[in-house]
Image (cartoon, one colour):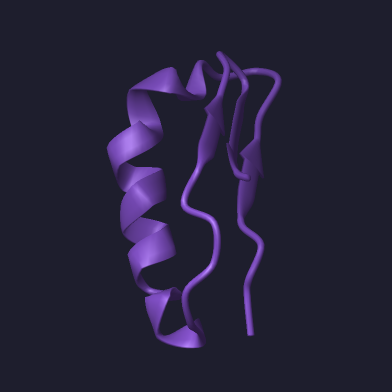
Amino acid sequence: MCAICGWINEKEDLSKNQDRFKEMLEEMSCRGKDHTGYHFEKHILLRT
């Protein structure tokens, strides 16, 4: 089973939180293998 994780904040530059976001995803790794691509913008961090 796969999981979805995203972080959106229009008031804060999230680009400096990429490592923290990846740590959040590691907590979900027990859910099984799926795509490991990421999409990072100034105000959006998504696992694609």
